[in-house]
Length: 308
Image (cartoon, rainbow, N blue to C red; front, top):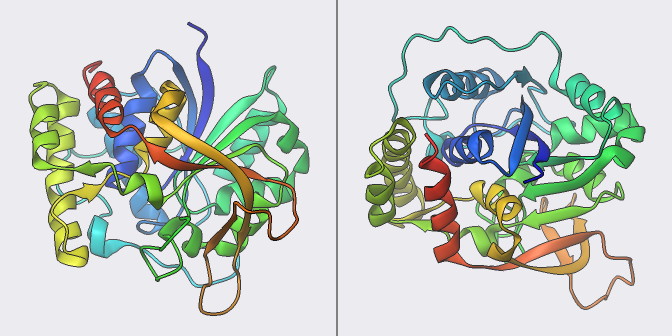
């Protein structure tokens, strides 16, 4: 099996943590490096969470700290969902792991520019690091095979009626990325909300009786309590792992091409306007997920966690 080489840009985050566990061990993926951005919590907390996950599961993955705030607007976090640490729930041993010295944006540029083959970039947090890398060195666009994003929504948002959190947190960065000419796959709330993590799912992962299964349980039980308190739902959507599941098995998602425009003004600030009917008369710039095979999604996650 030829492994797909990826850079994972994230802001861990409970759902990010599951995506990390999947990408780090599945035989179809070679995780070259992990870059961290401010989002679900502050950059410092997100970096600590990434290092804790790597140390706890003995993952040989280099971690790079990136941008600590959006390009233009004030930073916004999702502590109501992910807690004060950004990864409330698990209890980790004292942290020994450290980040690499290089800034995440410079790592992304160097890894891509010097690569012998194209690399897939998976972005499951705000798009600040990716936009900065594109602006600093546009030549990387030709070295990216695909940019797979968890973000946006065809319909309604989760931080405002119009906007999804990852896009809303740095909508100017998102606009740069979607206008870059990259081959973009957008996995938005329309599919991730269908991936509801029930207690039955949590119990099935814990039943693997390994570190990954127990970590999944410890994280997702707290995550679900917060989802219930904030949104009134008992089974929280597991957003970010949808990207990794699609890389492992593309049949898990149904995609539809369209032009996506990022709203950067007014009441709908941060909305991903998906033009399926060519009203804007602009060329398609993304493939947007419109449906998901939920049973296959959970099967893929279980397969990944069983590798631990």
